[in-house]
Image (cartoon, rainbow, N blue to C red; front, top):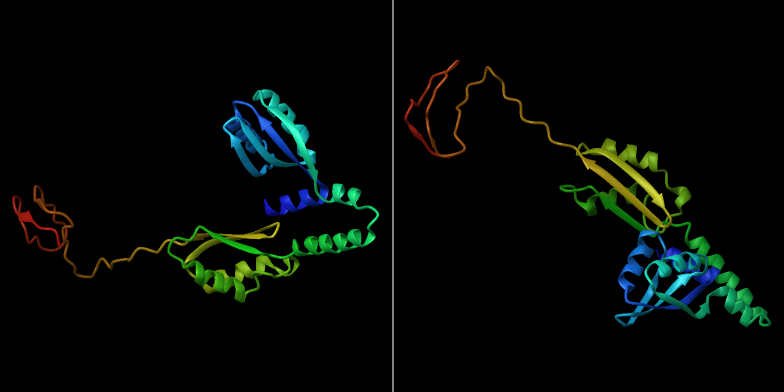
Length: 223
């Protein structure tokens, strides 16, 4: 979302007002259709100020018609309108080009790592292993070898059954599935006692091996 807002600043966006009795429905339909709205300011229950990208303005015309809302462009903002306003000031233009080139270069780095699927495994512990194997905040996306990182960590840990790394934008999403512990196998030839986990009365006994220490009608207590 942050990257989309930056792109809208670069390519231009509109500050609009929306008026009607179905403002909530208008917002919900915009979200369901993937229309990005930001900097929402509610003046009244039936009046809203909001920012929207130029390319998405056509989409909301149909939504406004459907929800019986009126939309009005209050102000045009962003780089194209700024340059048009200050087109004679070349230094501004050069400075802005440098700034936006820097922003685009920043988008080639990882700035957020999200770990999901862990229940018993410590997130801090796993994040440390990811950093040791090359996935860390500020690293160039091209330098991240997801396949090698996954294989290395899987070999290092027995408590991870599956692992995936998805790089999208400036985010890295690490998904894991924890391995289930194998049940303890009891040797059938080894002597052992059967212990009740609940209070109860013995109603039937079927002894195939060993010696019965209780009889029908006995009361057993939880241990």
